[in-house]
Structure formats: C-alpha cells, structure tokens
Image 1 (cartoon, rainbow, N blue to C red):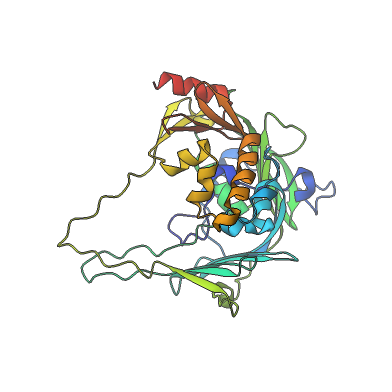
Image 2 (image 1 turned 135 degrees about the vertical axis):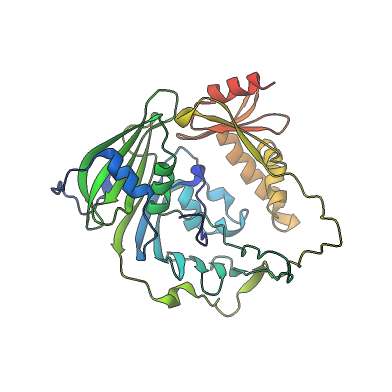
Amino acid sequence: MRKSRLALWAVPAAAAVVVAGFSIFPNVAGASPLLPAVTPQQLAANVATLKPVALSGQVQVDTNIGLPDLGGLSGILGVTQSADLTNLLTGTTTIKVAEDPKTGARAEIDASTSAYVAVANLTTKDGWTYSSAQNTATHYVMPPQSSTAKAPKPAEPTTTVPTPQSIGQQFVDALTPSTNLSVARTDVVAGRDAYTLVLTPRSAGSLIASVDIAVDAQTWLPLSVQVWSVQQTDKPALSIAFTSISYATPDASLFSFTPPQGTTVTTAGQDAKPADTAKPAKTTAPEPTPTVVAGEGWSSVVKVTNVGDVASALTDPTQIVKMLGGAASGSRHGQASSVSTLVGELAQQTPEGTVYSTNLVTLLVTPNGTVYAGAVPASALEAAAKASK
C-alpha cells in the first residue's frame, strides 16, 4: 500500500508469507493464456505506477523460510496467541481482504477456533484490531490537538498482514541496476489472466534467487508474489497469492467495527495531549538508524543502531517476555523457557555476536547492541561487523 493511504498493515521482510509450490495457481491446469506482448520494463512500470483500486477477495498464505515450530510462543506475544497469526510465520493461513481507497481497508482471519480482524476507516479516521482468542480489541483514534498545532497523523493498526499488491509494488519500487527483469510466462491466477514478471539479482551474494510477480493483464494489480531462495529450489521460500478476487467496490460497512459484548477494549491515540509550546519538549530515545555499510542492491548489508531493548531481547531470551509484558509471574518461568528453546533453535553464537538465519534474511546482533541485517549469508554480516570496529 502507498504511504499516502491509511496503513492497515506493514510489511517487514522477515514476516512475508507464501503459498508453496504451484498451489497458488488453482485455475492454471497447464493453461497459458495468449496475451499481447509486453516488455519487462513496461510491465514493471505498470505495476510501479498502479493507483489504488477497490477490491475484495481471499488470500492464501504459507511460509517456509526455515523457522522452527512457533507453537511455544502461545500466550507470550500478545495477539499471536492465535495460532492463525503464528502460522503467518511458519504455516498456512487464509485471509479475507477488502479495500476501497476512498473508504478504508479490512483483513480478517477467521478460523474454526479463533478470529482476528484489522480494520481502518478513512472516513472516521480510526481503526480497530480484534482477537477473539484473547477477547481483546484495540481502537486507534485521532489524538486531540491544539488550535495552532499541525494536524497529527491518526494512530494506526500495525498488524503485519501483507497482500500481493503491497508486496509486489514494494519489490518493483525498489528496482535498481542490480536487477534483471524478464517476462517468464503467462498464467491464470484467481481466475484472472496474468503475466509473470521475474526479478533476478545480476550478481551473486544474495540469499534471494528470484522474485516472481503474477500481474493482472487488465488491471496491472499484482495477484501473487513468490520469493525463491538459493538455499531452497524445490518451492518458494516466501509467497502470497489471491485465490479469489473481485474488483467491485466493497460495502462501506466492512470498514466499521463493533467489538462483541464482553470484549476488553484498549484505546490508542485518545490520551495524547496537545503540544504545550511553553514547555520544552521531553527528551525521547533516539530512533533506530539504518545505514548500508556493505554490498549493494540485493546483497546490501544494513547496520542498525539505537535498537535498545530489541537487541537485548535477541541476546537474552528472558528479556522478550519482559519487553512484551509477559503474563502473571507464576507462568513467566515457563514462558521464558519456551522462548529460550526457540531462540536456541534459531541463534548461533559467533565471535562477532548472535546470528539468526533463515532462508531469506539473516540478522547479527553484536555484544554492543548493534544489529546487522540483510538477505545475505551470515559470513557477509560478520565481515561487515568486523570492518565497522
């Protein structure tokens, strides 16, 4: 989604989701529709300049990036107590989505035992997230302001629920001279004829082998995204796809939400106070600062400073429970044990610090709390850390 629109979700690279193999093309059955010729550059430009459109449909997601079972995190990570949200990192999930660029957006995970809803409304300038597993909801509202202050941005949900168009446009927007473009084939995705735009690194060094984006041949909307890893060639490591889609404008009622009776509701944004120009502003913690320190394009290494508690939590698992609020003290020991087990499966201790590796993204946390990250092997991060000393 574009930054100019009310963001219902963000798309961090490590949390992208996939539909494994060719199951994302349920209507293909070997069919390759005959479509007018288009150059890779034209197709990429059409995706990059696509304006928001109204739509609704169903997105099937699946993840296979090399993470262990996250079941032990239940009850620790707040909204991820729902197994359906945890599956966004390690399993398969179906998400109902609806969007109207004039009215709002909605994403809903509705499983047999739980439901999770994220809603943003552009008319009322508010939003909701709701988890039936926890019987809790958060209402995001516009904070009050003084008559002279500039209008603040409304508080927004931060749920990570990506869609093919948001991920596809981010990849295309990030194109650099380090990328080869090609149109590999035509397919049918969610009943729509589509071109397949393939993005491939020009040079070695990245964990990403290629990114395949199925693009609607009529609307230019990305219908599916597959991210392939050099470490896993039999199926995509990350992908997301519509299994059904309609371009009819969704009913405006979808972008309003009333929590069920008995739900515990927390309000975000309402308690913010207008700025007092007579008093000096309070000193706040510095924002995390990312800097590219090695490589370029697909093999870039980013150094991030000022990450504070996040770095501490990645090096000491017990800090994760404290940072996220944990639960009652009686169960905290068991929670810390679950987190420690998970971190033990993911983390590797090296002379430069703690390394977390997946099939697509690697993190290195140094003893002084600096984070190095990239779609590169751990050796590239360690080399960058040594060079920065």
